[in-house]
Image (tube, rainbow, N blue to C red; front, top):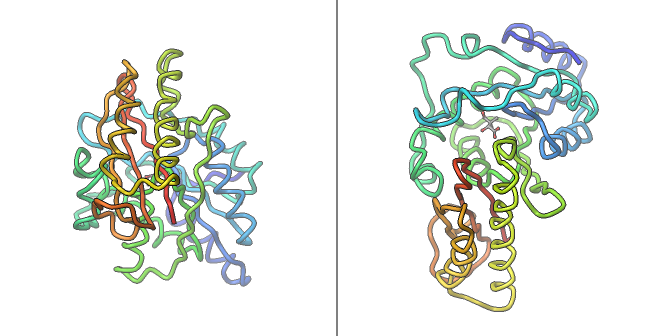
Length: 279
Ligand code: PAF
């Protein structure tokens, strides 16, 4: 698997593909790839002639007290997984290659200020900026994002529309462990007890979804039921549990589709997110 470190080189590779009339898919990641990323790469390689996987722990999307330094990294293992999944090349720049005295950042209102944006005020500006840069560097036909980061997916779709990027955004389903825990690079932070406790996220979401399917129309009642399950787990601390309109992330009092039920929960020191979408 070829690992490219510079913007110039990845641009030259993509230009040559485009000259041959080949389509290009991009899977943006922060590395430490797992089955969730693999599903995105597999899908991208089915739908495009060539696939670029970007592997970059982006410093601008981490707040001062977040886990930028300790975020897990393993480029050799990533190369093996990406190759197996059908990637053509990995783009793995250093931070200096991506940000040289940068003064320009993408910022967005409203949908970046709710849910995760309440406690991570700079996060989505960092995400939009790096994803916008990757779009300009790679110029893919399609880009693939997991639905586990549902707010991120919504924000990126809006950015693409607002800034007229000529790129199709493909959202892909959440990949879970057998016991229901959503796959995440951050799951590696969990010790044995925390790993067990983390099941309260997916279990409570399942219960919430069942309530709605059985006819509950009050979002407050659904959220309270979910919170009750999480609060009965001593190692868990809720950041937020909310039900919002999936089109614009605005809070809704009454169940109406499409909706997003999203949560962020600390298990010990590890902040995990999970959600379900009802179309
Ligand atoms: O979802 C992620 O891993 C990151 O937020 C992304 C989209 C690669 C941007 O750094």
